Image (cartoon, rainbow, N blue to C red):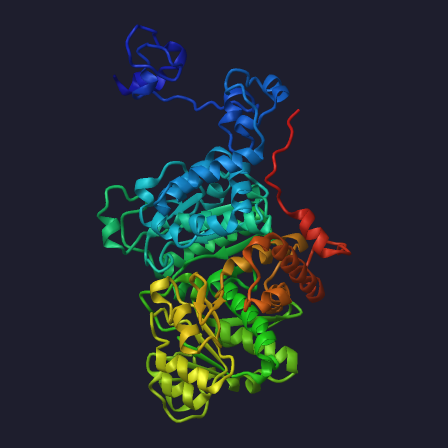
Length: 616
């Protein structure tokens, strides 16, 4: 066929000669539209009939009532039975449980999300503890690795170097206009798996699923974005099924200009109040982006700030079990930000800098590690003591040993504020014996670094040592729950980044806590949205952390828990949202006026419900 003929042909010109070619009209004709003719991708705009069944936002499957089937031309397109959403949930969870491979469960859940959004979220909410590891870590990591081969439906927005100069136009291609939360990644540091390039899209999709399921943020308000600047992963560059740009990563000016255009376009298209969450960027870019845009955009990094908030909440809760005030305790960190090939995003331990907005006007930079910094801020707030003073009870160990003043000249700048006067100490066990910490926190990304000698030293110094082994995955946890309880003879207060099963020791069952960021970010995001907050503030993180700690009841403490059960996560998120919103109003950062009288009830009223609605 000549090119000129192609451009001048129309669908109406096509002859219906009897062949088996088929085509857009589904006739057995010589339909050149299926070959090389340009066609217009018409779409039905009224949701009814077959189109309604293919729209995940409105599809209810067999739950369509008899009246709805008549009103929306569904008669005959569905089997005759009508079942409730509750029965659909029961059926789907049975189907999911039939799969033995976690990735198969993930694919089944993603397929459901593309077919029936309401049922997907209803299922996830009702079975959150069982399905959270399926739709997010750890299964989402494998899904990202194999994203090219399991890619079925386009989800999210892809912005590549090809779109430089046109990013605003690309954002406007997204069908939903009232966007309130953006989770964006460049795929360079996907969990503990490294550079997965464009295939990192599974992370923003999974994260936003949790914003909706756990925090009640409407799915139509969520936008997952992957910024594709290439990849340095040689395997992907040579992979036929790789879906991203096949060249090495852009860096320097080219990278910065693309991100600048992206941030400007987001603000222009969605306004001041859109929350932009940076997810799984390489450390240097993550720190730089927070530092650069925190004063001009509403930005958040869950890897850094969310982790700090959830760990602080666990420590505050643990005080009810060990006694004393936060300022009475001494903290020792293993892991001060050195690069580790096993370091997962959920336990990323460091801030390169943390900006404090005082009443939204004055800014100053507080160098330090994320968790340590937030602990220091909370102690300072509770004791009215200067940060320099309270920081003396917080010690860090890196790959070269205890961080002390004599090492200052060779230290990275964000470690220097934590270099205290002390003789050099190389081994962790010796640091424990000399510093005498009451709280030992692992963010090293290296497995089995809390050895028996280290844990037993903690037990010899403390009646109830607090041991937080935060590195992921399970193989990289500083110690296991069983080791912590056994080596302390059942006296440890233990929590981890990876999930561990309950441990039985001398006839008593211990339930380890999990410092999961999903406790914090969904409610935190909801609080920012419902108050119309326009800038981030460390006071908001402290408020979220305190709110989470307050949800641990005496019943939980009696079971040795320092985090509440995940089964109540939406209630927990509502309380976190209310506390965050309250603080935003106090700081003058909230724009949604007047302030609601009961912010907990207001948060609950703002939450998305996946229950089916009746159609006219």
